[in-house]
Length: 544
Ligand code: NA7
Image (cartoon, rainbow, N blue to C red; front, side, top):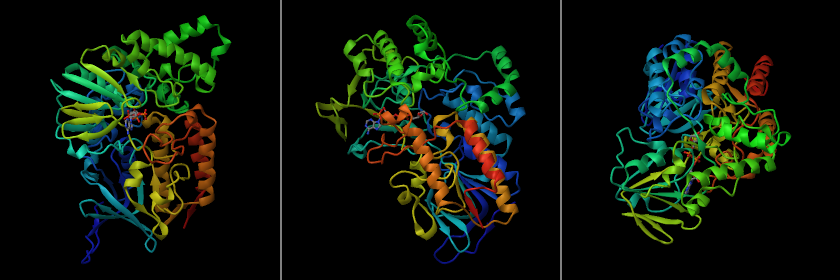
């Protein structure tokens, strides 16, 4: 169906009117579009970027790649696509993922329903008509009964509050907003700020060709080797033959990953057996070294410390300069209490003569200048600055939409002390707005397509029921929201993750209140709850 044009008034632009508006053409938004379109509803996607893929569109810095095995991170709903697509590496790089999502967009002719280069400026709920008015930065107006915000968890870049960036006369880039044109480090003096998952990926690439690289580290991370390798055609064929069992297994797993915690307790085995197991994991790919480990490493601080000692030894073996090695070993948090970055030659990079590491605790950056960075100890001249400073995760992208619900309340205000949601999907006071992949949803700790697919399917059924039953207004119940949010906090409080600062708690961003933002329950448990809630006539939502 085509859009209908509402009559423009003198002050308002003509509204483009749809049944369902989806914000974001990333992993979740594309899948949601495919399913909502099948319902025959008028649906449109608004996307700030110029292409599809979300994370894999924006994070195009050299070295960007998956930490989940490629074949576990793809849509499972299209057998033809599964049959046709060959992953070239165990952990695909950004370009391959972007090609994959473009292939999906081509196959389903999705672009005809997507407005690219369109950024939402504000969204207002009209209580009389029970519709959302969505205003874009370019002055366009969309109106829709239902809005699905698929804006992503790690999509709003975090900028350090260091003054003067606008005065810097060289080139600067944020890893999460990397340009399409190639960035050339050759012969340049480069500063990289940030040593999280993005930092450890980009740093070895910069060091290869830069004249000099200075890495500014706020806190060291427990980064572990990715162990990437090419996937030969025969291996790919074997993997493909096992897809039905694979996807079934991943759906039944805790977070949709290939690895799951070992039921064996590390203290039940001899130190020799334990150390051999650590060593074996160290040589295994991806998250085998994290969520494939003895389960008590995720729950018992003492067991975790023994593993930290092993990992610290590995860092000391790899970094020649003892003082640099010590700087790279975390002493403020246990292993796995933050997102574990996976790296390739990250630690060896510090053995290069053209690379320096600066601890911001010892030598903070005071300001950016036209020619570089002024630190407490002196000025550093650089030609390029790379900000690998992460994201205002979970809530940043939603807050930026400037969402105004019942009575003009803003979502930002409602969430000023931390988000309140029902299932991570609905928010009391914000009817007909559904969040896919935001705070309190399963995706924060999981493999994104695996964690979102069943929720997106559930949402499509909900949308179908809403329109079939002529429901005008759907709103999460405030009490159901309280119970869900308390449940979220309770599970997190019992976890080792609560012992440190991280983007899971929001306190990676200066000034953001500390509140747990993800969901630590299991994927099957979450999906079962969703199904029960639907069976009970969407318990916890008011439909009218
Ligand atoms: P992360 O993991 O949040 O890492 C950001 C890094 O930037 C981390 O080292 C931060 O230090 C550092 N940071 C953040 N703010 C500042 C300021 N103000 N000054 C100096 N350094 C700062 O984000 P990534 O992009 O690396 O990874 C995000 C996800 O992408 C990851 O989980 C994967 O899913 C892919 P900190 O450690 O907080 O002290």
